[in-house]
Image 1 (cartoon, rainbow, N blue to C red):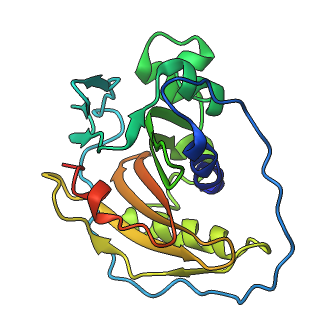
Image 2 (tube, rainbow, N blue to C red):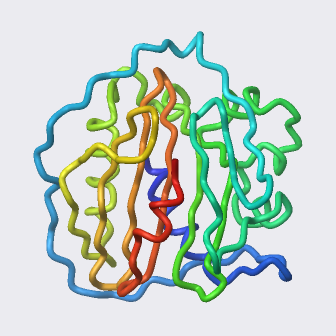
Length: 230
């Protein structure tokens, strides 16, 4: 779950990218601030996904005519006006655990050999938002058996975010995300110190968790992006 915390930080680094430039890896510099402790809310535990890790096989998604599709995850994301889908080169320069960046041809092999594998990213050219799609291997993370559903995964995520001394997070209750054929669960994160909000969508798949992270600046209406996820 610590990898998801890094993902949220990475996602905001992507907001300044455009289709005409290749983003460079950077280190984020934190400023000291007063933080109120935030306790993740009690939630209703979603039912666990019945499909076993042995039966589930991931395939790489693709972008065609401005739509990212991944059949194995059962998702489509239309790139909204103002957003740019990252090329593999751009994604690899930001996220060093995509399959391509490791030189791994088989997507499933990439997922089985590293904690998190990223498949897709897009950024708002104006710097107000970014989206990343990733898959976490709970067995390599050391959380297999400790995380058995989406609610338990999100509880770990919110606890890790709350522990950040340079941020002040508050969270919504876990809720079922509308618009997807399969059941995904989500939590809204509001970070008041740095004015960066996140919506984390997750689907538990045996020893894996698929994630869609949308980060956006304060004052941005997230519905324009969320409505493009189906």
